[in-house]
Length: 181
Image 1 (cartoon, rainbow, N blue to C red):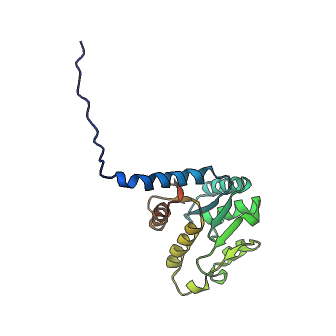
Image 2 (spheres, one colour):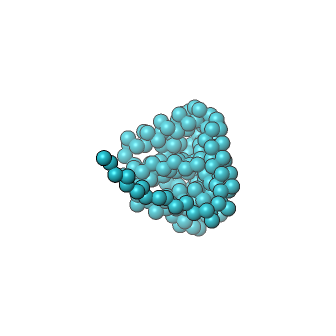
Image 3 (cartoon, one colour):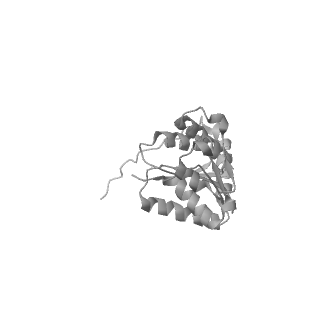
């Protein structure tokens, strides 16, 4: 004979039901964004990546552009942004928008070289007196504000990028996070 054991019960609070329509609207919006054929996609992430990760990001970006998406990223001589720029430029330079934290002149020479030929670059001379870290935080928010979906490549210790992911989620963007550690 088997004994009937009591199963634990799950309590669902009903006082939070006022939030349900907003949650449903958010889910419907995210589903519509995912199903949309062409999206504005932000790609941001760490500068310190091995070449294999950069190649994956470049290939992913290339595939996203070939599928009709546009890419928004920032400048960078190495890492995520550089790989995203290379992938988008190979697929269709017109589908790439690079938003710089400051001006082209404030970028290192290797970044300036990488920006040659990109048709859509946004500079911010108004941030010229900010530290690069502060200007980059503002830049990440600007990139997120312009996109419908964000892909972020980061490590678990990337404080600035974790804040960018939180901001994107608060802004109801579709967010995909790849941890590289």
